[in-house]
Picture 1 (cartoon, each protein chain N blue to C red):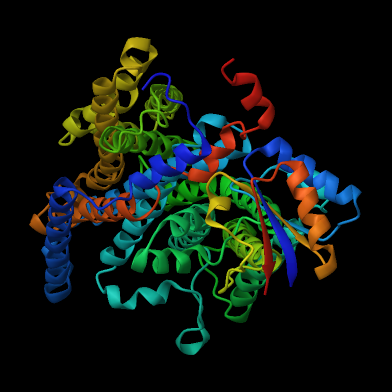
Picture 2 (cartoon, rainbow over the protein chains, first blue to last red):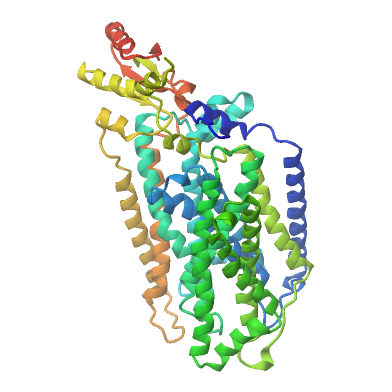
Length: 446
Length: 167
């Protein structure tokens, strides 16, 4: 695609082409996703029918892959806000063609994450007990509980992400509206909310977008900090640690960036978006992964060092158990995939090769899932008194709901890829020099 | 509403046209463009958007609401847990922070909707689909007897299409 010149009209045509009626592959993938969502739904129905006993949860491991999935998906969400809000504030130009996909990842990952605390409640129909309202006898929710902080943090994050995502979409939806016909025109006209790109609209829009980015930036740091405090404010060895907030935030961005790379590579290929999403974009994401990978590796090292340095038997026991105990295989997956494998990106050949990028980003996702699993399960399984030790083994319900959550995310993403512009038309145009008469005259053939 | 719309292919000519109209005394201009540009606002001499005031006001409102919610509920049902004070600020600040961001973001969105006057149901005849693609549109409000002179300024400035709009 070398020499392909991007112009305003080209950008419209190329991005709108991604929204043409889908091919067979899309329907097959969507059918698979829906099938797995249905499996997850059936497992959830079984849980509602028979109670939490159908999960593999048992004393002492009462939090396992349900909370693993919750923390994992919240983490996946973080890179979207990093790319769309933080890089926006830093005026990073290369974010323009990839931020829409990253933001979609945020929104759909939050749709997925938000399911798990509710599924995990045991009696999910009482989820509204978590909301702040005056309950029987004048009692309110306990604002000192980290679980209540979680409700506020996740709801705020979801609301702000959706506002940010939709605000960014509106001018693009107007482009779609202007080019569409029939029912699609009516649908996008509704979604575009009468956007016309007037000077008044743009002036307030750019201001609002800037402030939304400025609000989302501290928010994203707070959300995974709050999630980490679910663990850190307890007194369980392996959880009770002051490093947890930055450690979780870095890990969240680590996994999220890997997810964005893993999704961008097929998108770029299938929709032939090479002139937009270039190798440089993927390489820049890989460089960010080096940074987050180093922070995550450092955090692992500090955890083990502090456990040794604390001279606390229980703390040392918890960390020794991680690397040589029943779940040692998981710990090694976590350490190697998250902290060692990303170092390969230091080699330019590897971070510019699509198969390596895809492979490593998938490994990081596996590694980050296991990080959450190991932190949650090993700490609970092996705390303090040997009398209370126990093991966790997932049942088909745990696994089906987990598979269903990945399919649920995939289903939303597939729908997004066909019904909304996956690359921001307006922001890509903003990066281009506007067409000028002076340039045309200068460049005209003699 | 009566006026003339000029379509421009070229951004530099479009900016020149805005300046020319302002020099000729036409101050009631409206622009539609595929992308935002600061130069357009500068040429039109528009004020800074007031959306930031909405963000600040609502964020402060969110802080107050968060403090009120946490402190008031704790005081109205005093239940000592773990020997800690009834009003425990460190955990409450988490809620206060989240409320600040949430209400601030809602306020920003409201500020956008109110100031940009969206959503709107009808799109006026001055709009053209090319304005979301690759053309810049300039709408000049004028009286019926000014239409001729406005149109000729447009043609001189290099507009590729000049339309007379009513309604």
